[in-house]
Image (cartoon, rainbow, N blue to C red; front, side, top):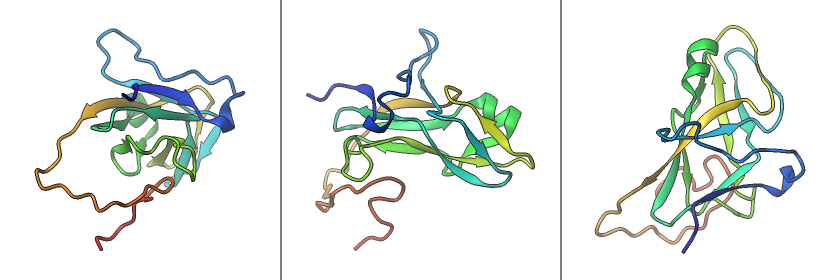
Length: 152
C-alpha cells in the first residue's frame, strides 16, 4: 500500500526545504512553498519550483490552489486555475515528480517570491472511475501536459 506523503526531490536535497504542512488542525490544505527566489514579470507565467514530490494511493489526486492572500494582495493565480497532481506523477523518469506551480502574475508590477514563501495549498481527494473505464495503457511522461492533448 502506498503511503500518502511528501518528499524532497533529489535536486533540492540540500536546499533546506520544509515539507508541506497544514497550518492548523482544521486546515484542509498542505502549504507548498517556493524552493528558490523568483521574480514573475507583469502579465507573465512562470513555473515556480517547490522542490517537492508527493506520494499517494492509486485512487487519489492532489489538487493545488493558490493561497488567497497572494491572489488578493499581489494578483497571482495558478495559470490553469487548479493544479492536478496524479498518483503516478511521483518518480516519473522526466522530472522525478517535481511539483512546479504555473503562476500567472495578473498585475502590472513584477512580483518577487522569496524562497520559503507559501504560495499554494494542496488538498488530497479520492476520485471515482467510470464503470467501463479503459485508460488506454499510456505511460506518464514528465510535467505539464505530459499525457498529451488529443484522444487517439
